[in-house]
Each structure stands twice: as structure tokens, then as C-alpha cells.
Image 1 (spheres, rainbow, N blue to C red):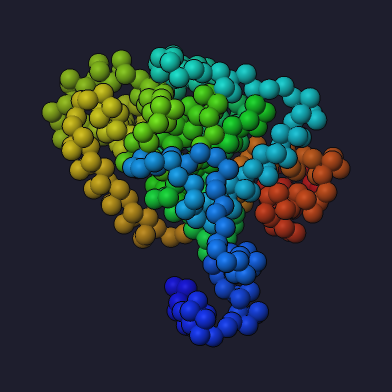
Image 2: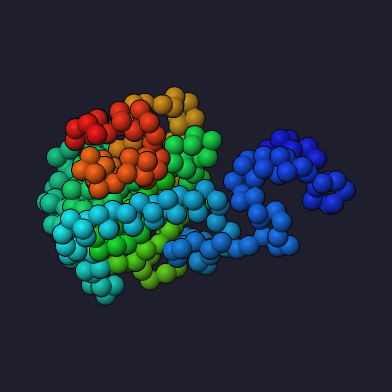
Length: 360
């Protein structure tokens, strides 16, 4: 709490006393605020560089957190570098970026997405679990040329956790280096739907940040179209309608759908709502119980894991591999490679080695 850390904060604000420069520097660091802002009469508004769609309410950009702003700015820098690198390497534009129109049938776009990723209609069903299907989807997106980043903190700063209630993800569209970012602080059960929603954004050519509360889109035509395409891509309408009559009265109907399509039960329930197979009240009751249970489990789950494997998600294997190759070939300064990946010294060297590209 900022007032606990700075007990004289109210006196500084009211003008009863003045902080020292060192105290101001400490406050700026603690609140992630540029020092110069404290000397302005009014705090400046720093809008997001992309449209920001909320499920409940209008598009807004003036109240975004410093964590979201900083994350988007870092991703923009990485995207700009990769785009220039790929152009310099002679790579052409990705043909699927901006290839879809809003008035196209969602099933047709879903099929084009599968083709672009090298996935057939039953790709997920062959995986042993939905978590494995999620990994396959991430890797297929990167293989197709999309930068995929999954992170629940700002960079590697564990003290700056991203809030899934603020945003679930964002998309930065580019013909050479499209980037999708998934808030890793969100439950994994929702991440596959977020990825599919972001894929649709790439095909429509629409950059955006969104919260997807209750896995519902904002009141915006593009957002709604992205949700329809995501649903069709993950759980095709014709297939679910064939299965539903035999399971609709069973207590584990969502689990049955999830097992069949290798999606989380959350995605299965959402698809049933989209097709009006269940009521909105039924879905919301299930959704809230599921999310509450997931958050309780997450609170008990130990943090950590393999640091270097985590970087494949936090940095993105496609981007990191390009940076390491460029540094190895002398096309990028070592210091700049560290800055781009937010990994320094031996940490960067070990991660570079883990990619199997060879030493610098």
C-alpha cells in the first residue's frame, strides 16, 4: 500500500510538507511513475496506442494501468525490431494478415485459420489433453510467423503482476511480425479462447486490447466477429450440434464437450451459450463457480518452474531465436540483444544456449 510505504503522502499532496528529491524518486519508482510527472499541475493522459475494448462499457484508453502501458510499449519495440530484421532478411509479407472481411462466414474464416497454421479439422481431438492442445496451438502460431507472448508480469519483474480483470490480451497487427500477447495471470482454461480470439484479430487486421469478461466481446462489430471466429475455430458449430442431443441432459455435458474437442470446460460452456443450447444464467452460474475454483487453486499453486523454459513464453521463442541469430551474426549489438529480451549477462547467454542455436 502506497500510504503505508509513504506515511506522509497526504501531507505532501495537501502542501503541508514537501518531500525530498530522494523521497520523490522512491515514490516514482514504487508507483511506476515518471519523476517529471510530479512537477506538473495536472497528470498527463497517456492513451493506449491501440483501441481498448471492454466487455461492459465503451472503448476507453485514459485509465489504463502503467503495467499495461509498459507491456504494450515493450512489445511494440520488439515487434519493430523483428519487422526490420525480417525485411532485411528478405522475408515477404505474411499472406493471411488482413485477409478476412467482417461479412465473411465465421466457419470459412475458421477453416482458413486452420489451413494457415497447418492444422486440420480434428487437430485438437488427437491431443491427450486440452493443455497439450494449447501448446500445439501456440507452436503452430509461431511456426506460421506470429509472435506469441504469454506473461503474467511486466517483463521479468515479479513485483509488477498484470491484472486479468483489466485485460486478457492484446494484438499488434503487422504484415511481417504480427504479435499476440496473452495475460499469463489469467487462468489457463481461458487462454486458448484468448489465443483464438487474437488469431481472428490478425486475420481481420485489427489491433486491440480487450478484457473479454465472462468470455464475452465488447459491443463492437469487430470484437463480436472475432469471438464468433474463435468459437468456430475451436468448436465447429456443425459438430457440436451433432453431439449435443446425446449429452444435453447429463450432469457432465460440458466435460464431455471439452474432452471431445480438447478445449477447457469453460470454452465448451461458452460455445454452448453462443449456440443458445443453454441460457445465459446457466452459463454465468457455471462460469463464476469455475473461475472462483480456479483462482483458489492458483493461490495454492507454487510459483516458479524452469526459468529458461518460461522465457519461451515471456519473450516468445520466435522473437528470441531471431535476436540470438542476429547477435551471433554480428547484426545486433550484444547489449541491444539483452535490452530487447530483458535478459542480461549470463542469464541471456544461458537462455540463448537453451534455444539450441549455438553460442555467441
